[in-house]
Length: 74
Image (tube, rainbow, N blue to C red; front, top):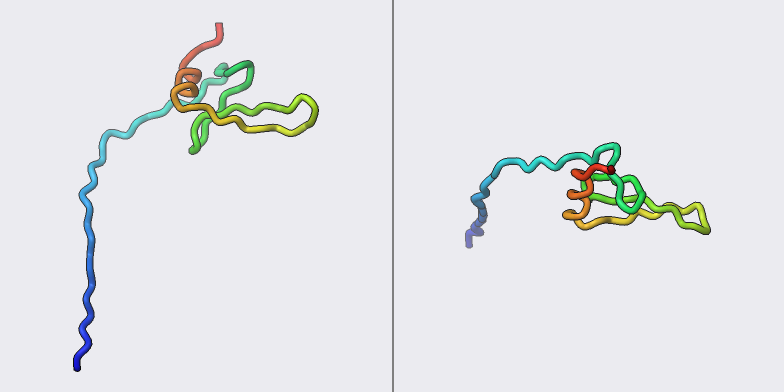
């Protein structure tokens, strides 16, 4: 009796498009009076609780953060 070894290889075709450039929020970008930040997770603001020193991160939908990063405060 002879044991046979079988190996399976799987390949996928992946298309790479143009890299989408997402602008960093400008220094003046704010949402509801809070400075706008961006990281790999998306756009967010930091709010401080009124009755404690705790700072809470609030994630924003991408469309809202993107629009706020392009808008200027007048």
